[in-house]
Length: 373
Image 1 (cartoon, helix red, strand yellow):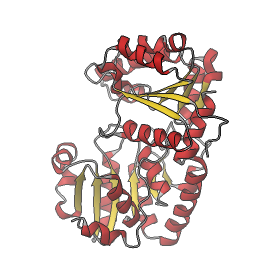
Image 2 (tube, rainbow, N blue to C red):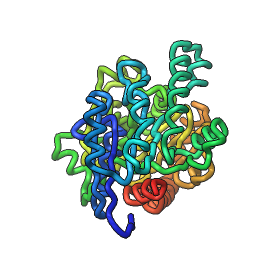
Image 3 (tube, one colour):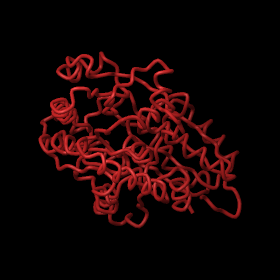
């Protein structure tokens, strides 16, 4: 729980906030709710880059906050300029001096993956990522604390900006899917008009390049060979988008259900009925993946990958099914886990315990406040 002698006045700056949905929006909402629940006064301001910065500054000065938290993803503040937002960055640079309070930069993402785009000879994206890195480097100098959501990223930036390393910390991104208690989650989904297969394999995806779609397909095809009743449930993507990105997967017909946007309550129910959750990631599993955190919270077995962002500060091999960056091995591990219900149950129990102890909303919010002292 969050414990302070008195409530603090907190400003939460975010690129998006409900009713607009998304990873940063949902996470911001969860954190704000957790802070308010224990007596902190939180002023939320979303999309500051679309507002008059002078008027916003005057409002914040009138509020007299003790702490300002900026939830950062580059594309969030520069959606039409490839994540480059010089006016917003300059506004952030004077926050501490202008408001005379503590400031925290919550870095959900610093840039596009530079090495990945260079290796794939995507020169324009690689150059854009390089400029995004420079922008973030500048931004970090103007906050009292910078919170990264995985240890690998913190280590990288601590080496890159060694003089600022003491201000860099790690938190975990909590699940943005509240657990929906249900005696019969499948029946509730059916009542909502959903078709629930006997064997549901869950995948969260909107087409982000960090997700290895070919791994998902290989694993699901391997699973169909031993379990023809299996159906891949795709959350976050409609049929048209799936056909654009992976037509071979879309051509599997009734074996693939695309749900598009799904309300949090239904996502929780799907997490309870699924046999496995597939999450192959090019940079490896880390604590910044909200969908992975949601699966752990629900005691689900996640089949995922080890990569450059996977660090041993979390015992991933105990709370997930962890494959190397190999499409064949990922598919084999998926089949192995499906065939071993006892192992799935053991991993699920360990995942839920780990999540509640270290990544729940109250724990994460407390960590943010602690770093903002």
